[in-house]
Amino acid sequence: MSSESNNHSSTHSNEPQADAPERAPFSSEPLPLVHVGDPVLRQVCDDWDGSDTPELRELVERMVATMHDAPGVGVAAPQVGVNLRLAVLEDLYEIPASFAEAREREKLELMVVLNPSYEPIGDRTATHYEGCLSMPGYTAAVERPADIRATWQDLDGNLHIRDLSGWQARIFQHETDHLAGIIYIDKAHIRSICTDENYAGLWAEPTPHEVREALQF
Image (cartoon, rainbow, N blue to C red; front, side, top):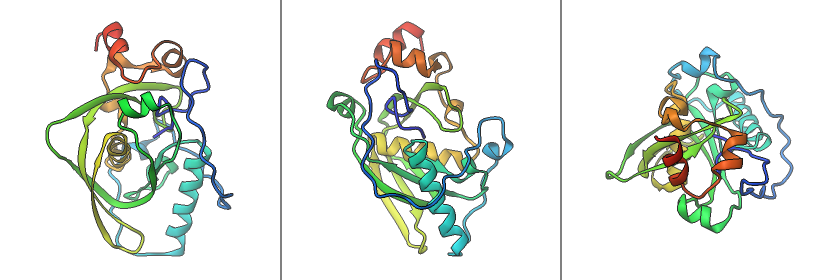
């Protein structure tokens, strides 16, 4: 999932900019990102079998480097051409308080999730614009459960269950969907689709209320 809108990486002056967090230099090289149209993005990924190998650790490190380089707040294994139920997530960006409040966006420390799944908690939903590193140049509004119960394993095989809300829940759902061959646009309001430039120039607001009325979705 890309980092600004606040979900895709926009450089337009009308879009509130997320300040990049300070990070220690990362030695691993980023991997090339796979874009829509590549069949790997439409495959149901293989489950992780519990094997902790040097190759898996290297893949995780390079996926984190890819996420930082993009920049984004999440990368799933199929986005780098690997058919495995694995994703990395992190959101440490600083955004304006009005946007953070409206989008329930709190910082998310680095998560490495294997065999992730989620289920909604309650009926509350939220609609916000998302972007995807595998579909650069566009953004669209997606209605998702606002509160979820997330389940995953870490690299040591430990099982984790955590309740997530707001933007953290959105990131987890976006990346987990990738592992089932689902791209965010599959769940988006089709009439909401914008180029990054049009979104930044016309609709960069804390909520999609105005754009929803204008584009009728």
